[in-house]
Length: 258
Image (cartoon, rainbow, N blue to C red; front, side):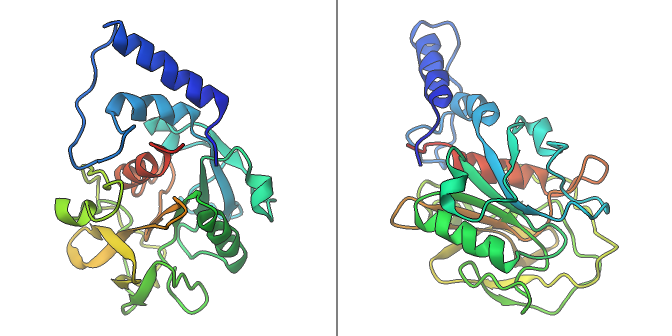
């Protein structure tokens, strides 16, 4: 999973500017332990990172993520969002830095889960969303061990970062974020909260107002793969969801990759 040439050129250009004293190095969080985790590198990588969406229910119009809008992630700088919904193999995902399943207000489908799992097992980065994931129809056993009783008015924003110790238990350590507004998706009364994560994974964020519900799950593997599941939705410009948490997840998934 090699970074593109333009990514490397961008990194070299930034390094030259830093060496020449033309721009000051940004302060980094000690909790984000990664050789390439300087904030200046994160900022430079946003525009260059290819986020390849392999599944998204574009037919829905109820304030859920759509590929073409590049929003609201685009407002955070993640503008290179690519439609890869026709992909059926990892070979068709060549050049992708992060593979994304926009499950949003429902769950991860079987076909997208299988493709994402193959990408992850090969050392790739995956971001999935979906507040119905964990139901029998949308299982994600690699990250979710148990879900609780379905909750009406399930929050889809404002997730709270886990402790520094919990976030540091994955390598590289998961960055922190400032929680956004705790929006509620009133059109969906069937969202099941995650009450236990799978073995080998870490709950890096909880649901606002519900510290026993996991909103963000991170996992790594021996091949270098990284996966973050946001048990919520990113939403749209009109009704944004978990934007700060998604921004932190993408930084962790994209930065420091070889």
